Length: 151
Image 1 (tube, rainbow, N blue to C red):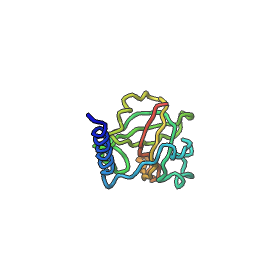
Image 2 (tube, rainbow, N blue to C red):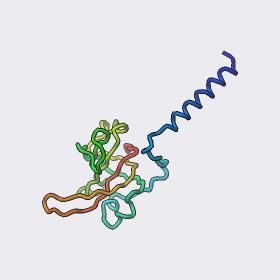
Image 3 (cartoon, rainbow, N blue to C red):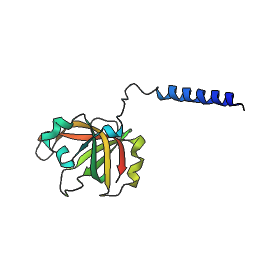
């Protein structure tokens, strides 16, 4: 095969890949580079005082894996998302945070160990929680994960 023909095929392949990459679903939004996520302290993330500061922000959070849940929070479809429960890496009895991950990146969950350290990159979102024992409603943050890594 001539070099000219190989160059043509290479350019054609790059063009096709570029076209396919630009055909994302209209509801998908660009995910920032991992370096653009703001690092958040676990205990600050769970405090009401910082709710407005973190709501709708892309955050990076170090935590420990505490298990999986069944139904995702925030009205996200159960056939596309999975719940995780995470805890503080430094405080044993701190509040837990719910993390919702798309099933297409949930493969890492099977390799996580209970109380294993992980880092979550994702968007903080608000949800209203009603406590069954008191009926009190409270706004809390949860995270829709874009990426999870073991530490």
